[in-house]
Image 1 (cartoon, rainbow, N blue to C red):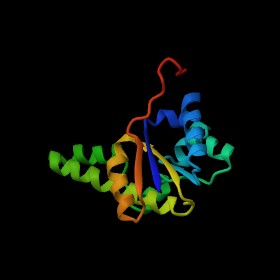
Image 2 (tube, rainbow, N blue to C red):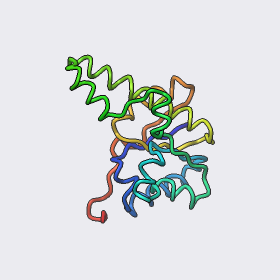
Image 3 (cartoon, one colour):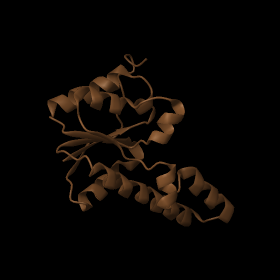
Image 4 (tube, rainbow, N blue to C red):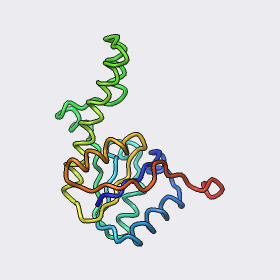
Length: 164
């Protein structure tokens, strides 16, 4: 089982005690065996931070994996980022249908990479934290790869009165 938690990425990188507490409590209550996330070291290293998800995994002693491909992996696997795709769309004056297809192709390549990486630490059940735009497509890919996927929250948000 892979539990999917959809978030805005800022919750992965900015202090939010409520997010940490949510992850910690969910993992303890559901005996989560491993934790992975849509994140890579490139972005974190450039900011000199760790992700909230990795910090909680470490506290719990759970295996953790950043699954998003770094720049070197993207280049090797010919995976374009959103900005690169948008540049090609602008440069080549692609139609809306062509633009949508190009975005879909590269999003799919990234998500396949996530599955390859999460398999290296998978202990059932797993928590996977990703951006909200990936929940539908990634859950289908997980099912196709033989995993059962369950979406916990399509857009996790803290109680605004507690968010600092």
